[in-house]
Image 1 (cartoon, rainbow, N blue to C red):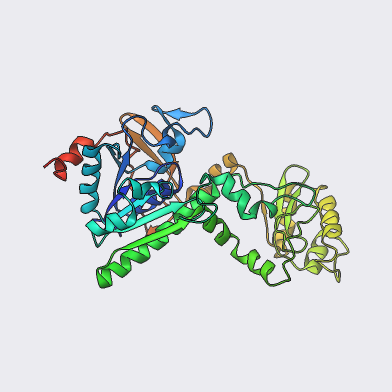
Image 2: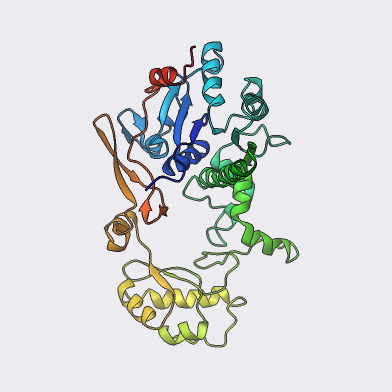
Length: 377
């Protein structure tokens, strides 16, 4: 299979998670990605640990989002290095950056300056809260964006305080959204030949994530979301929606008519108001499900056509045949160091996109890139 973005040159000037994750998606689709990072330490993500685990001197996080890239070491404040980076960008199709608002322009790498040199260039930028405004100078960090977005009041039960996501969801979503914009800009360039400046932010990504429930809030008089007091899983969905403890594990119940569920569980639920009595109904369901094993309840509920699933941990998921058939894991290498990580979650013409090259060392490809692009000519 010819990769969809084969022949496309992307310059990844970003660090941490959001920008590099966007560049990773383009690399998986076949683009060549040159990562520009500081000679003294490189991308801060190299030492940003999810735990005490590192592989070959870099964090597992860095390996996960910077595989299949080349590294050009450059200090943008150094005239020689800045000239080299400009010359690479002059020949590139896409640049991705998440430099603080105003800093890129001061360094001569703002979208306007880059597109003035290369009119076909697409510059993708991710900020924390927009390029201007009272929040523009705030730290563009995932947990802080979650906090400001209001999303923390959707998870957890009514008696809980705000509950953050257990993932860097703002970073990852912003990266996905930037890729959408870049791909749309590439289509437009293919038609009319013009480049583009594509922008998003962590806050915009978090607001977009909530578009479904936020629309409800905006059209019901502005009432805040009301989390269930019992087993909340969605602030705007009625009973039985939630996760319940069984005798030996946990069981998730999705949208199900109460009369059907009541008959399956031998509970008097028919005719009751799933919203008005949400907490009381869920408490009865929780008490009932605690009397049996997860497997026994699944056998009964699935036979009655009720939407349900066991709650898996990672070891359980990874051992499932249904998961292994998806072929979502791969072994990549850097030098002789093996790293197990995920693969791109998309197939084209039946083939999984992506390559098995590991993340680069700082400046690993600098000399070759300088020669190839005649950066010192």
